[in-house]
Length: 519
Ligand code: B12
Ligand code: SF4
Image (cartoon, rainbow, N blue to C red; front, side, top):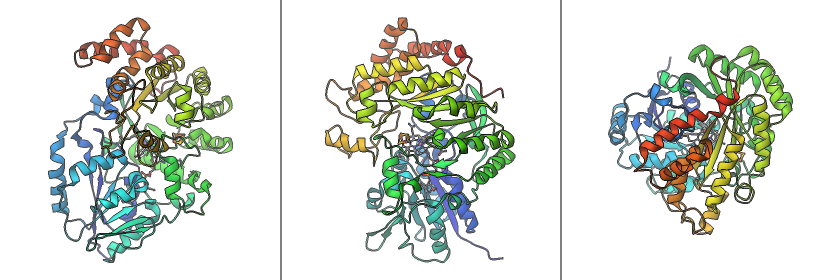
């Protein structure tokens, strides 16, 4: 048997304080294993950062407190660089492979600066930020290869080149840096793989310990796993990276329909079964952008098999327009509880239509929630504040919409202009950002600088913090909430008390939503 000495270190610059599986890692690890690489993993979740989105949801009352149930002692953030350097010195990897979204890339660069790699090590990066912003990443001159395509199609070729000690130049779907001349060569996307080839990679989970499967849910710890049943979205919202992803991933002559893929059911159910057998998953979360956009026939067949072969509670996200009596009845008839997550974003129609190009009105959002509540289905609503041209009045329209739709749980983010989004171009054009600002996370602060009467960055942060309180507590508490809004630092105790009180006004409990926990 041939012994392969090649080693690869995967890095996931996880900006949260929680072990969660970046979907790309098991795929990359599976491909590396198949190519006989020895794999190692460095995930930054275990280093304490400032509060992450997960912590914030609980602190503000969007989700019930649960992370403390699975929290372990965390290492200081300052240790990341030294620990990573030690891992690299000890492993002497042939490849360091990074996967990152935009905010994760920013975070990665905050500790990668002083890291030294052995002469032979190829440093490569892929993932959403590499697809959306390959020029900027390449110009940093820190990466031998920036991968702008799907790992399933380009990673095997990269590994086989390294296995044969060959140059990484001229691989379709990559930007190659010639280290001696600093010349960057760009090789266009090879296009998208058809669904039968996309999902025939055997993922490898051996780099991930049990912590990666434990998640808080309604104040308890469960075993949860995010599974892909499709990829891509047909819509073109201005605040989303999907339109830019479409352009970047498709070849010029490739039909847009290739961007929307549906996983073959046999592949999906083989994976469900593996995750139940080997990782004892309690609840599955589907990663599809808009699950109910799948045709009714497919959903019907999917549910029939799901009820028979999986029979566990599940969570999916979808757009309000796709929620209909027929589709919900079809999903519910097998008696398995599920949660539906819906992007609501704003209660102001001009923000939804003119700014976000959301093509969905607050009326459609209300009817979707009415249908879901009538069926006692647990809901999660995603909100966003701090959009360009958003005013305080718009913010309170969003609060009113929340009070009308009464989601079981909710998440609220601060709008961030990210690479490739139409709204980023608008923000630059209107002078709300220069385009050179460091990125912020979805819970840290707004980087927009808008004139009055639009919300200032300070107002956005203050309103974001008390959004769930304004949306769930009776109006008699508004003077107290306002105190927390305008001076949080001197009203932290009051804020905590109000968050506790918020759970006495638990819409899910009042409605007796079907629980996912007692199935
Ligand atoms: C499901 C999903 C989630 C799930 C996470 C699932 C998971 N376990 O990873 C949840 C709900 C938790 C989530 C959260 C967030 N998400 Co999200 N999410 C998605 C969604 C719909 C699918 C992602 C997915 O699983 N894809 C499948 C995996 C396999 O694809 P992938 O990671 O891109 O990897 C492929 C390629 O990129 C490439 N690749 C990746 N790495 C590497 C490395 C190498 C070396 C190579 C060769 C190739 C390669 O190959 C992989 C396989 O094909 C995407 C939309 C989209 N179209 O991507 C948004 C998306 C990724 N999310 C986005 C955002 C903004 C977020 C949040 C920041 C939102 C928030 N408000 O908090 C958080 C961040 C979470 C965090 N870091 O803490 C944005 C990212 C935009 C950007 N420019 O970075 C996206 C693109 C949606 C959008 N609105 O634009 N998300
Ligand atoms: S529906 Fe969701 S995933 Fe699709 S473009 Fe709009 S925000 Fe993005």
